[in-house]
Length: 152
Image (cartoon, rainbow, N blue to C red; front, side, top):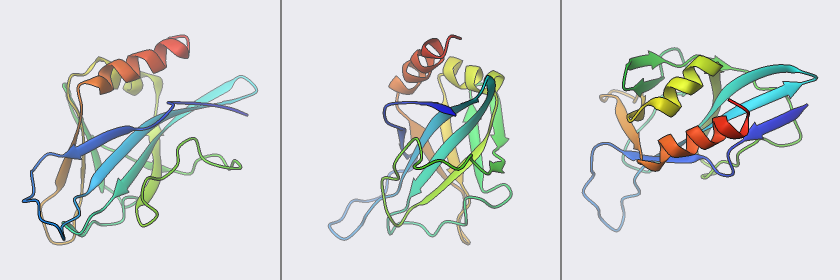
């Protein structure tokens, strides 16, 4: 099996600014597409890592409706999947205390992500409103280059 991924995942920052203080650690989120090629059978997944600070208490990201992806053309709840078992994952978690999961992804959704100016993830929290994370402007170019490198 061969695996295609970005050199490093895309970092997303919180949509809401939290008052900075020396004892406050702010949460971050990361995502990265993954292509698995098993003898010509290609499948995709979206690797997501949530590195929680001490600003929010998040639900399990593998739960139903726990993670939502928002693009220019709308939002969709992501569905968790089991990734193929390999010696190590395509991306390394940023925070050892964070949550990591793989979500269902297909080529049309990956193309929509690469064509979208808006790329956001939001997560369910425990008893609070959902918390949103926004990708920087370079995310679109990064995903376009990834698709081009994969031959799309």
